[in-house]
Length: 487
Ligand code: NAD
Image (tube, rainbow, N blue to C red; front, side, top):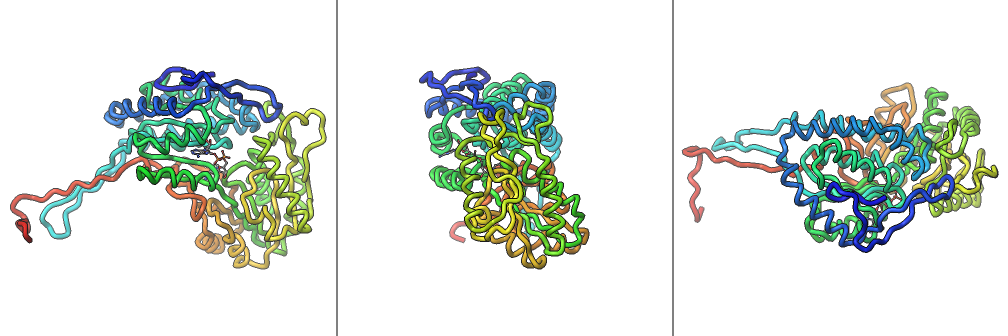
Protein backbone atom coordinates (compact mmCIF):
# COMPACT_ATOMS: atom_id res chain seq x y z
CA UNK A 1 0.00 0.00 0.00
CA UNK A 2 1.17 3.56 -0.65
CA UNK A 3 0.76 6.65 1.47
CA UNK A 4 -1.86 9.29 0.84
CA UNK A 5 -0.73 12.85 0.07
CA UNK A 6 -2.59 15.57 -1.83
CA UNK A 7 -5.35 13.15 -2.75
CA UNK A 8 -2.88 10.76 -4.45
CA UNK A 9 -1.37 7.42 -3.51
CA UNK A 10 2.40 7.93 -3.41
CA UNK A 11 5.62 6.13 -2.47
CA UNK A 12 8.40 7.63 -0.43
CA UNK A 13 10.81 9.53 -2.69
CA UNK A 14 13.47 7.09 -1.36
CA UNK A 15 11.29 4.09 -2.34
CA UNK A 16 11.99 2.68 1.14
CA UNK A 17 9.17 0.68 2.74
CA UNK A 18 8.43 -1.27 5.91
CA UNK A 19 6.21 -4.20 6.83
CA UNK A 20 3.01 -4.30 8.81
CA UNK A 21 2.36 -7.64 10.51
CA UNK A 22 -0.68 -9.23 12.10
CA UNK A 23 -0.13 -9.56 15.88
CA UNK A 24 -2.48 -12.57 16.02
CA UNK A 25 -0.51 -14.63 13.51
CA UNK A 26 2.84 -12.94 12.94
CA UNK A 27 2.01 -12.92 9.21
CA UNK A 28 2.86 -10.08 6.86
CA UNK A 29 -0.23 -7.96 6.14
CA UNK A 30 1.21 -5.35 3.79
CA UNK A 31 4.11 -2.98 3.40
CA UNK A 32 3.89 0.82 3.40
CA UNK A 33 6.30 3.59 2.40
CA UNK A 34 8.87 4.54 4.99
CA UNK A 35 8.28 8.28 4.81
CA UNK A 36 11.20 10.56 5.64
CA UNK A 37 11.51 14.28 6.33
CA UNK A 38 11.31 15.17 2.64
CA UNK A 39 8.08 13.18 2.21
CA UNK A 40 6.65 14.83 5.31
CA UNK A 41 7.62 18.32 4.07
CA UNK A 42 5.75 17.66 0.83
CA UNK A 43 2.63 16.63 2.73
CA UNK A 44 2.89 19.71 4.96
CA UNK A 45 3.25 21.96 1.89
CA UNK A 46 0.17 20.36 0.36
CA UNK A 47 -1.81 20.83 3.56
CA UNK A 48 -0.65 24.45 3.75
CA UNK A 49 -1.70 25.12 0.14
CA UNK A 50 -5.13 23.59 0.79
CA UNK A 51 -5.66 25.48 4.05
CA UNK A 52 -6.87 28.70 2.44
CA UNK A 53 -9.44 26.98 0.25
CA UNK A 54 -10.77 24.76 3.02
CA UNK A 55 -10.84 27.42 5.74
CA UNK A 56 -12.75 29.75 3.42
CA UNK A 57 -15.28 27.06 2.51
CA UNK A 58 -18.57 28.04 4.19
CA UNK A 59 -19.25 26.20 7.44
CA UNK A 60 -22.41 24.65 6.02
CA UNK A 61 -20.42 23.09 3.16
CA UNK A 62 -17.75 21.81 5.55
CA UNK A 63 -20.53 20.30 7.61
CA UNK A 64 -21.99 18.58 4.53
CA UNK A 65 -18.61 17.12 3.61
CA UNK A 66 -18.18 15.73 7.12
CA UNK A 67 -21.62 14.10 6.95
CA UNK A 68 -20.72 12.60 3.60
CA UNK A 69 -17.44 11.26 5.02
CA UNK A 70 -19.42 9.60 7.82
CA UNK A 71 -21.76 8.02 5.25
CA UNK A 72 -18.93 6.72 3.08
CA UNK A 73 -17.04 5.33 6.07
CA UNK A 74 -20.19 3.59 7.33
CA UNK A 75 -20.83 2.16 3.86
CA UNK A 76 -17.33 0.61 4.01
CA UNK A 77 -17.56 -0.45 7.64
CA UNK A 78 -17.10 -4.18 7.12
CA UNK A 79 -13.92 -3.88 5.07
CA UNK A 80 -12.42 -1.19 7.28
CA UNK A 81 -13.17 -3.16 10.46
CA UNK A 82 -11.51 -6.25 9.01
CA UNK A 83 -8.47 -4.20 8.01
CA UNK A 84 -8.25 -2.79 11.55
CA UNK A 85 -8.52 -6.22 13.20
CA UNK A 86 -5.81 -7.63 10.95
CA UNK A 87 -3.29 -4.87 11.63
CA UNK A 88 -4.16 -4.10 15.27
CA UNK A 89 -5.42 -7.40 16.68
CA UNK A 90 -8.70 -6.38 18.35
CA UNK A 91 -11.82 -8.54 17.86
CA UNK A 92 -13.93 -7.69 14.84
CA UNK A 93 -16.85 -6.44 16.97
CA UNK A 94 -14.57 -3.92 18.68
CA UNK A 95 -13.09 -2.89 15.33
CA UNK A 96 -16.58 -2.28 13.96
CA UNK A 97 -17.33 -0.12 16.98
CA UNK A 98 -14.15 1.85 16.38
CA UNK A 99 -14.95 2.56 12.73
CA UNK A 100 -18.46 3.59 13.80
CA UNK A 101 -16.91 5.93 16.36
CA UNK A 102 -14.91 7.67 13.59
CA UNK A 103 -18.12 8.25 11.64
CA UNK A 104 -19.87 9.41 14.79
CA UNK A 105 -17.18 12.04 15.46
CA UNK A 106 -17.66 13.38 11.93
CA UNK A 107 -21.43 13.56 12.44
CA UNK A 108 -21.14 15.23 15.82
CA UNK A 109 -18.85 18.02 14.58
CA UNK A 110 -20.84 18.38 11.36
CA UNK A 111 -23.76 19.21 13.64
CA UNK A 112 -21.83 21.74 15.73
CA UNK A 113 -20.09 23.69 13.03
CA UNK A 114 -21.82 26.88 11.87
CA UNK A 115 -24.03 26.87 14.93
CA UNK A 116 -21.61 28.40 17.42
CA UNK A 117 -22.23 31.83 18.91
CA UNK A 118 -19.56 34.46 19.43
CA UNK A 119 -19.46 37.49 21.73
CA UNK A 120 -20.35 41.10 20.98
CA UNK A 121 -20.05 43.07 24.21
CA UNK A 122 -19.72 46.76 25.18
CA UNK A 123 -16.51 47.90 26.90
CA UNK A 124 -16.96 48.41 30.62
CA UNK A 125 -15.91 52.05 30.01
CA UNK A 126 -18.71 52.51 27.49
CA UNK A 127 -16.64 53.95 24.63
CA UNK A 128 -17.11 51.10 22.20
CA UNK A 129 -17.47 47.35 22.00
CA UNK A 130 -15.58 44.21 21.26
CA UNK A 131 -16.28 41.14 19.16
CA UNK A 132 -14.75 37.73 19.82
CA UNK A 133 -14.38 35.49 16.80
CA UNK A 134 -12.79 32.13 16.20
CA UNK A 135 -10.30 31.37 13.43
CA UNK A 136 -8.90 28.02 12.35
CA UNK A 137 -5.27 27.55 13.35
CA UNK A 138 -3.73 26.26 10.09
CA UNK A 139 -1.93 22.99 9.39
CA UNK A 140 -2.26 20.42 12.18
CA UNK A 141 0.13 17.51 12.69
CA UNK A 142 -1.86 14.64 14.19
CA UNK A 143 0.35 11.97 15.77
CA UNK A 144 -1.47 8.74 16.64
CA UNK A 145 -0.91 5.63 18.78
CA UNK A 146 -1.61 2.04 17.74
CA UNK A 147 -4.31 1.14 20.25
CA UNK A 148 -7.24 3.04 18.65
CA UNK A 149 -5.76 4.18 15.33
CA UNK A 150 -9.05 5.10 13.66
CA UNK A 151 -11.24 6.51 16.42
CA UNK A 152 -8.38 8.67 17.71
CA UNK A 153 -7.78 9.99 14.21
CA UNK A 154 -11.48 10.93 14.23
CA UNK A 155 -11.17 12.73 17.58
CA UNK A 156 -8.63 15.00 15.88
CA UNK A 157 -9.57 15.38 12.24
CA UNK A 158 -13.36 15.66 12.77
CA UNK A 159 -13.25 18.82 14.94
CA UNK A 160 -10.13 20.08 13.19
CA UNK A 161 -11.57 19.84 9.68
CA UNK A 162 -14.92 21.17 10.90
CA UNK A 163 -13.12 24.28 12.15
CA UNK A 164 -11.37 24.74 8.79
CA UNK A 165 -7.89 23.35 9.50
CA UNK A 166 -5.97 20.92 7.29
CA UNK A 167 -3.99 17.86 8.41
CA UNK A 168 -0.90 15.77 8.09
CA UNK A 169 -1.57 12.57 10.03
CA UNK A 170 1.24 10.35 11.25
CA UNK A 171 -0.21 6.98 12.25
CA UNK A 172 1.69 4.61 14.52
CA UNK A 173 4.17 2.62 12.42
CA UNK A 174 2.41 -0.67 13.15
CA UNK A 175 -1.15 0.54 12.34
CA UNK A 176 -1.09 2.80 9.24
CA UNK A 177 -3.32 0.77 6.91
CA UNK A 178 -6.86 1.55 8.01
CA UNK A 179 -6.05 5.23 8.60
CA UNK A 180 -4.76 5.44 5.02
CA UNK A 181 -7.95 3.84 3.71
CA UNK A 182 -10.16 6.18 5.74
CA UNK A 183 -8.28 9.28 4.50
CA UNK A 184 -8.75 8.19 0.87
CA UNK A 185 -12.48 7.64 1.50
CA UNK A 186 -12.73 11.14 3.00
CA UNK A 187 -11.37 12.67 -0.22
CA UNK A 188 -13.73 10.46 -2.22
CA UNK A 189 -16.53 11.90 -0.11
CA UNK A 190 -15.69 15.44 -1.16
CA UNK A 191 -12.89 16.67 1.09
CA UNK A 192 -10.45 18.72 -1.00
CA UNK A 193 -7.34 16.66 -1.88
CA UNK A 194 -4.60 17.93 0.41
CA UNK A 195 -6.86 18.66 3.38
CA UNK A 196 -6.15 15.24 4.93
CA UNK A 197 -2.77 13.64 4.24
CA UNK A 198 -1.40 10.51 5.87
CA UNK A 199 2.37 9.92 5.97
CA UNK A 200 3.57 6.53 7.18
CA UNK A 201 7.01 6.28 8.74
CA UNK A 202 8.98 6.34 11.99
CA UNK A 203 7.97 8.67 14.83
CA UNK A 204 11.54 9.90 15.18
CA UNK A 205 11.56 11.05 11.53
CA UNK A 206 8.04 11.88 10.29
CA UNK A 207 6.94 12.99 13.77
CA UNK A 208 10.06 15.08 14.29
CA UNK A 209 9.52 16.87 10.97
CA UNK A 210 5.99 17.77 12.09
CA UNK A 211 7.53 19.30 15.23
CA UNK A 212 10.38 21.09 13.42
CA UNK A 213 8.45 22.47 10.46
CA UNK A 214 7.26 26.08 10.98
CA UNK A 215 4.30 25.55 8.62
CA UNK A 216 2.68 23.22 11.15
CA UNK A 217 0.83 25.38 13.65
CA UNK A 218 -0.59 22.74 15.99
CA UNK A 219 0.31 19.25 17.14
CA UNK A 220 -2.47 16.97 18.33
CA UNK A 221 -0.76 14.03 19.99
CA UNK A 222 -1.98 10.83 21.60
CA UNK A 223 0.54 8.41 23.02
CA UNK A 224 2.76 7.68 25.97
CA UNK A 225 3.58 10.30 28.55
CA UNK A 226 7.32 9.94 27.81
CA UNK A 227 6.75 10.67 24.11
CA UNK A 228 4.45 13.53 25.12
CA UNK A 229 7.39 15.17 26.91
CA UNK A 230 9.42 15.04 23.69
CA UNK A 231 6.46 16.48 21.75
CA UNK A 232 6.30 19.41 24.19
CA UNK A 233 10.02 20.08 23.85
CA UNK A 234 9.90 19.81 20.07
CA UNK A 235 6.92 22.15 19.83
CA UNK A 236 8.61 24.85 21.87
CA UNK A 237 10.76 26.22 19.03
CA UNK A 238 7.77 27.60 17.08
CA UNK A 239 5.36 27.83 20.05
CA UNK A 240 3.00 25.34 18.44
CA UNK A 241 -0.47 24.85 19.83
CA UNK A 242 -0.65 21.50 21.55
CA UNK A 243 -3.12 18.92 22.74
CA UNK A 244 -1.59 16.02 24.58
CA UNK A 245 -3.60 12.90 25.35
CA UNK A 246 -1.21 10.70 27.30
CA UNK A 247 -1.12 7.63 29.50
CA UNK A 248 -3.36 6.74 32.42
CA UNK A 249 -3.59 4.42 35.41
CA UNK A 250 -7.29 4.64 36.04
CA UNK A 251 -8.68 3.70 39.45
CA UNK A 252 -12.03 1.96 39.91
CA UNK A 253 -13.56 2.32 43.39
CA UNK A 254 -16.22 -0.22 44.38
CA UNK A 255 -18.13 0.87 47.51
CA UNK A 256 -19.94 -1.44 49.93
CA UNK A 257 -23.38 -0.50 48.52
CA UNK A 258 -22.43 -1.02 44.86
CA UNK A 259 -24.38 -3.28 42.51
CA UNK A 260 -21.69 -5.97 42.51
CA UNK A 261 -22.79 -7.74 39.34
CA UNK A 262 -22.77 -4.47 37.43
CA UNK A 263 -19.36 -3.55 38.84
CA UNK A 264 -17.93 -6.96 37.89
CA UNK A 265 -19.11 -6.45 34.30
CA UNK A 266 -17.63 -2.93 34.36
CA UNK A 267 -14.26 -4.20 35.57
CA UNK A 268 -14.12 -6.96 32.95
CA UNK A 269 -15.17 -4.64 30.14
CA UNK A 270 -12.96 -1.83 31.41
CA UNK A 271 -9.81 -3.93 31.73
CA UNK A 272 -9.89 -6.61 29.05
CA UNK A 273 -11.44 -4.79 26.08
CA UNK A 274 -8.76 -4.20 23.42
CA UNK A 275 -6.59 -6.65 25.43
CA UNK A 276 -6.23 -4.01 28.14
CA UNK A 277 -4.60 -1.54 25.78
CA UNK A 278 -6.82 1.46 26.37
CA UNK A 279 -5.69 4.72 27.90
CA UNK A 280 -8.78 4.72 30.13
CA UNK A 281 -8.78 1.00 30.84
CA UNK A 282 -9.50 0.11 34.46
CA UNK A 283 -5.94 -0.34 35.75
CA UNK A 284 -6.36 -0.48 39.54
CA UNK A 285 -9.43 -1.68 41.48
CA UNK A 286 -10.08 -0.53 45.07
CA UNK A 287 -12.64 -2.66 46.91
CA UNK A 288 -14.36 -1.91 50.20
CA UNK A 289 -13.50 -4.75 52.59
CA UNK A 290 -17.07 -5.96 53.15
CA UNK A 291 -17.66 -6.69 49.45
CA UNK A 292 -14.10 -7.61 48.44
CA UNK A 293 -14.52 -11.40 48.63
CA UNK A 294 -17.85 -11.47 46.76
CA UNK A 295 -16.60 -9.12 44.06
CA UNK A 296 -13.34 -11.06 43.65
CA UNK A 297 -15.09 -14.42 43.39
CA UNK A 298 -17.50 -13.14 40.75
CA UNK A 299 -14.77 -11.38 38.76
CA UNK A 300 -12.60 -14.54 38.80
CA UNK A 301 -15.54 -16.49 37.31
CA UNK A 302 -16.08 -13.80 34.69
CA UNK A 303 -12.43 -13.52 33.66
CA UNK A 304 -12.21 -17.30 33.25
CA UNK A 305 -14.88 -17.07 30.54
CA UNK A 306 -12.90 -14.60 28.39
CA UNK A 307 -11.97 -16.42 25.19
CA UNK A 308 -8.73 -15.29 23.58
CA UNK A 309 -7.96 -15.76 19.92
CA UNK A 310 -7.64 -14.25 16.49
CA UNK A 311 -9.95 -11.23 16.33
CA UNK A 312 -11.33 -12.41 13.00
CA UNK A 313 -12.75 -15.59 14.52
CA UNK A 314 -16.28 -15.51 15.79
CA UNK A 315 -16.51 -15.91 19.55
CA UNK A 316 -13.18 -14.23 20.30
CA UNK A 317 -13.50 -11.88 23.26
CA UNK A 318 -9.89 -10.74 23.45
CA UNK A 319 -7.17 -10.55 20.81
CA UNK A 320 -3.38 -10.50 21.18
CA UNK A 321 -1.23 -7.81 22.73
CA UNK A 322 -0.23 -5.53 19.89
CA UNK A 323 3.54 -5.88 19.97
CA UNK A 324 6.26 -7.94 21.58
CA UNK A 325 7.83 -5.22 23.81
CA UNK A 326 4.36 -4.50 25.17
CA UNK A 327 3.76 -8.17 26.01
CA UNK A 328 7.14 -8.38 27.71
CA UNK A 329 6.35 -5.27 29.75
CA UNK A 330 3.09 -6.78 30.99
CA UNK A 331 4.93 -10.01 31.85
CA UNK A 332 7.57 -8.02 33.73
CA UNK A 333 4.85 -6.25 35.72
CA UNK A 334 3.11 -9.51 36.63
CA UNK A 335 6.44 -11.10 37.70
CA UNK A 336 7.33 -7.99 39.69
CA UNK A 337 3.99 -8.19 41.55
CA UNK A 338 4.49 -11.93 42.21
CA UNK A 339 7.96 -11.30 43.61
CA UNK A 340 6.24 -8.99 46.11
CA UNK A 341 3.85 -11.76 47.20
CA UNK A 342 0.89 -10.94 44.96
CA UNK A 343 -1.44 -13.89 44.29
CA UNK A 344 -2.39 -14.62 40.70
CA UNK A 345 -6.10 -15.52 40.70
CA UNK A 346 -6.47 -16.06 36.94
CA UNK A 347 -3.98 -16.16 34.05
CA UNK A 348 -0.49 -14.81 34.58
CA UNK A 349 1.14 -16.42 31.57
CA UNK A 350 1.07 -16.94 27.82
CA UNK A 351 -1.63 -19.36 26.66
CA UNK A 352 -0.56 -22.95 25.97
CA UNK A 353 -2.94 -23.66 23.07
CA UNK A 354 -1.08 -24.65 19.93
CA UNK A 355 -3.10 -22.39 17.63
CA UNK A 356 -2.14 -19.32 19.68
CA UNK A 357 1.63 -19.80 19.66
CA UNK A 358 2.36 -17.63 16.63
CA UNK A 359 0.50 -14.60 18.00
CA UNK A 360 1.37 -12.22 20.83
CA UNK A 361 -1.24 -13.56 23.22
CA UNK A 362 -1.31 -13.25 26.99
CA UNK A 363 -3.95 -14.65 29.30
CA UNK A 364 -6.42 -12.27 30.91
CA UNK A 365 -4.89 -11.93 34.35
CA UNK A 366 -6.23 -11.01 37.76
CA UNK A 367 -4.12 -10.47 40.88
CA UNK A 368 -4.75 -9.74 44.53
CA UNK A 369 -2.56 -8.76 47.50
CA UNK A 370 -0.52 -6.55 45.19
CA UNK A 371 2.02 -4.35 46.95
CA UNK A 372 1.42 -0.62 46.52
CA UNK A 373 5.07 -0.32 45.46
CA UNK A 374 4.72 -2.93 42.69
CA UNK A 375 5.23 -1.69 39.13
CA UNK A 376 1.60 -2.29 38.18
CA UNK A 377 0.44 -0.13 41.07
CA UNK A 378 2.81 2.69 40.18
CA UNK A 379 3.09 2.67 36.39
CA UNK A 380 0.64 2.37 33.52
CA UNK A 381 -0.05 -1.34 32.90
CA UNK A 382 -0.97 -1.39 29.21
CA UNK A 383 -2.23 -4.93 28.87
CA UNK A 384 -4.69 -7.47 30.28
CA UNK A 385 -3.52 -7.67 33.92
CA UNK A 386 -5.58 -6.21 36.74
CA UNK A 387 -4.55 -5.73 40.40
CA UNK A 388 -7.22 -5.75 43.14
CA UNK A 389 -6.66 -3.77 46.36
CA UNK A 390 -8.76 -3.69 49.54
CA UNK A 391 -9.47 -0.37 51.30
CA UNK A 392 -11.21 0.49 54.56
CA UNK A 393 -13.35 3.40 53.33
CA UNK A 394 -13.93 5.96 50.60
CA UNK A 395 -11.32 8.37 51.90
CA UNK A 396 -8.58 5.74 51.72
CA UNK A 397 -9.78 4.70 48.26
CA UNK A 398 -9.60 8.29 47.00
CA UNK A 399 -6.15 8.80 48.53
CA UNK A 400 -4.86 5.62 46.89
CA UNK A 401 -6.60 6.47 43.60
CA UNK A 402 -4.79 9.82 43.51
CA UNK A 403 -1.40 8.33 44.35
CA UNK A 404 -0.19 8.33 40.73
CA UNK A 405 1.42 10.72 38.25
CA UNK A 406 -1.59 10.10 35.97
CA UNK A 407 -5.04 11.63 35.99
CA UNK A 408 -6.96 10.44 32.94
CA UNK A 409 -10.07 8.45 33.89
CA UNK A 410 -11.55 6.92 37.03
CA UNK A 411 -14.78 5.33 38.18
CA UNK A 412 -16.82 5.00 41.33
CA UNK A 413 -19.47 2.36 41.88
CA UNK A 414 -22.18 3.10 44.47
CA UNK A 415 -25.94 3.60 44.71
CA UNK A 416 -25.43 6.69 46.88
CA UNK A 417 -25.14 9.68 44.53
CA UNK A 418 -23.88 11.96 47.28
CA UNK A 419 -20.98 9.60 47.82
CA UNK A 420 -20.41 9.32 44.07
CA UNK A 421 -20.33 13.08 43.69
CA UNK A 422 -17.94 13.46 46.63
CA UNK A 423 -15.55 10.93 45.06
CA UNK A 424 -15.85 12.55 41.63
CA UNK A 425 -14.96 15.93 43.14
CA UNK A 426 -11.92 14.56 44.97
CA UNK A 427 -10.44 12.22 42.35
CA UNK A 428 -7.75 13.97 40.31
CA UNK A 429 -8.77 12.82 36.84
CA UNK A 430 -10.26 14.35 33.69
CA UNK A 431 -13.25 11.98 33.82
CA UNK A 432 -15.03 10.09 36.58
CA UNK A 433 -17.58 7.53 35.44
CA UNK A 434 -20.30 6.70 37.95
CA UNK A 435 -21.52 3.09 37.77
CA UNK A 436 -20.19 2.90 34.23
CA UNK A 437 -17.26 1.39 32.40
CA UNK A 438 -15.00 3.88 30.61
CA UNK A 439 -16.97 4.86 27.53
CA UNK A 440 -15.92 7.97 25.59
CA UNK A 441 -18.80 9.88 24.02
CA UNK A 442 -18.51 12.41 21.18
CA UNK A 443 -20.38 15.07 23.15
CA UNK A 444 -18.36 14.78 26.38
CA UNK A 445 -14.93 16.48 26.68
CA UNK A 446 -12.13 13.98 27.23
CA UNK A 447 -8.60 14.54 28.52
CA UNK A 448 -6.23 14.33 31.41
CA UNK A 449 -5.17 15.97 34.64
CA UNK A 450 -1.55 15.81 35.83
CA UNK A 451 0.84 13.89 33.55
CA UNK A 452 -2.02 12.41 31.51
CA UNK A 453 -1.85 15.51 29.34
CA UNK A 454 -3.71 18.73 28.69
CA UNK A 455 -6.23 20.17 26.29
CA UNK A 456 -9.46 18.34 25.60
CA UNK A 457 -10.76 16.26 22.72
CA UNK A 458 -14.45 15.67 21.94
CA UNK A 459 -17.34 17.87 23.00
CA UNK A 460 -17.61 21.59 22.29
CA UNK A 461 -14.27 21.96 24.11
CA UNK A 462 -12.63 19.69 21.54
CA UNK A 463 -13.69 22.04 18.75
CA UNK A 464 -12.35 25.02 20.65
CA UNK A 465 -8.87 23.52 20.61
CA UNK A 466 -8.85 23.85 16.81
CA UNK A 467 -9.46 27.60 16.90
CA UNK A 468 -7.49 30.71 17.70
CA UNK A 469 -9.55 33.25 19.60
CA UNK A 470 -9.52 36.63 17.94
CA UNK A 471 -10.70 39.83 19.66
CA UNK A 472 -11.73 42.85 17.61
CA UNK A 473 -11.97 46.07 19.67
CA UNK A 474 -14.00 48.88 18.16
CA UNK A 475 -13.77 52.43 19.54
CA UNK A 476 -16.86 54.40 18.55
CA UNK A 477 -16.28 57.89 17.18
CA UNK A 478 -17.09 60.66 19.56
CA UNK A 479 -17.42 58.41 22.55
CA UNK A 480 -15.18 58.41 25.63
CA UNK A 481 -11.67 59.76 25.95
CA UNK A 482 -9.70 61.31 23.03
CA UNK A 483 -6.46 59.36 22.82
CA UNK A 484 -3.31 61.50 22.54
CA UNK A 485 0.36 60.75 22.98
CA UNK A 486 1.87 61.58 25.44
CA UNK A 487 -1.08 60.51 27.60
P1 NAD B 1 3.86 6.17 21.65
O1 NAD B 1 4.06 7.39 22.48
O2 NAD B 1 4.95 5.16 21.62
O3 NAD B 1 3.63 6.58 20.12
C1 NAD B 1 2.61 7.46 19.74
C2 NAD B 1 2.97 8.09 18.40
O4 NAD B 1 4.10 8.95 18.58
C3 NAD B 1 3.38 7.08 17.32
O5 NAD B 1 2.80 7.47 16.10
C4 NAD B 1 4.89 7.24 17.28
O6 NAD B 1 5.44 6.86 16.05
C5 NAD B 1 5.03 8.73 17.54
N1 NAD B 1 6.37 9.16 17.99
C6 NAD B 1 7.30 8.44 18.64
N2 NAD B 1 8.40 9.19 18.85
C7 NAD B 1 8.16 10.42 18.32
C8 NAD B 1 8.92 11.63 18.22
N3 NAD B 1 10.14 11.73 18.70
N4 NAD B 1 8.36 12.69 17.62
C9 NAD B 1 7.09 12.62 17.14
N5 NAD B 1 6.33 11.49 17.19
C10 NAD B 1 6.86 10.40 17.78
O7 NAD B 1 2.46 5.55 22.12
P2 NAD B 1 1.81 4.15 21.70
O8 NAD B 1 2.62 3.06 22.32
O9 NAD B 1 1.55 4.13 20.23
O10 NAD B 1 0.38 4.24 22.42
C11 NAD B 1 0.13 3.80 23.72
C12 NAD B 1 0.07 4.97 24.68
O11 NAD B 1 -0.89 5.92 24.26
C13 NAD B 1 -0.34 4.57 26.11
O12 NAD B 1 0.46 5.25 27.04
C14 NAD B 1 -1.78 5.07 26.20
O13 NAD B 1 -2.25 5.31 27.50
C15 NAD B 1 -1.71 6.30 25.38
N6 NAD B 1 -3.04 6.69 24.92
C16 NAD B 1 -3.63 7.81 25.44
C17 NAD B 1 -4.91 8.17 25.04
C18 NAD B 1 -5.58 9.41 25.58
O14 NAD B 1 -6.55 9.84 24.98
N7 NAD B 1 -5.10 9.99 26.66
C19 NAD B 1 -5.58 7.38 24.12
C20 NAD B 1 -4.96 6.24 23.61
C21 NAD B 1 -3.68 5.92 24.01
